[in-house]
Length: 334
View 1: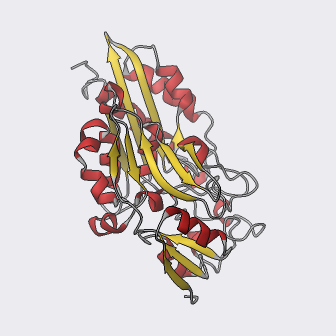
View 2: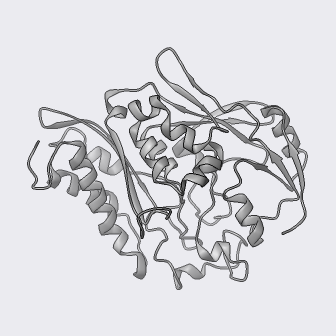
């Protein structure tokens, strides 16, 4: 591992100024991803600015909206009574991620900034456009079973690994960012970016931008009727092969509200807006949900070894929505 300097910030503004003054510096949260990448030689910062001492509080507005500090640990957020009651998809996604030990270390801000687990990215002996622009993407012809089918490009087919971010996408969360001169708020859809010709950047953040909080809107019937499902190769401590965060409200058999996001299929949490539009106002049936999934996934561009993700995501989406609609395994309304 390359030698590096280590500093602890005393405030968000102090942290931003420290990073802005050194183009070779990075923020350090729980370190559950960054330190691994440093050991592998993928990340080589000359300076780490530790931001875990910044406020780690969950503040509630009068209307019930929540402001979650970026330094809040994933395990603390997962068991917060307000999250479990009003935004269950987020609690379930957090508890589906990693191990208990890792959740005790990982922070909300760091979770959003996880890098892809594509093995070509984490192996510095291999070419990778995300790590070394212009070096190529051997995953397209090589090992790509776990990689993306939506939003990918010729330059990169990597997936975003976070469970938490998928739930936040479905719950219409906003990321609060402190820059050098001002604070700004970004919807999750504007926080992440697709690779296009430049897969080196996963987000729209600039060097020195610090995530200070994540905001959840005031709870509604929709947010309280949300859930998260994850398919993985083993029962625990494994990244998703596919996942779905969904929220649904049905009245008299008709869908009146719906939110849907996919995980492990794209370079960012994939908000399934095409499917949402198709479902909204229609009958709450498995047939209607399946047709909507087909519309959303018609844009998929799978590679030979990850084509199964189309059917997997379709199945996860239909079964998750059916469960929220109260449809039992025989297709009957409960």
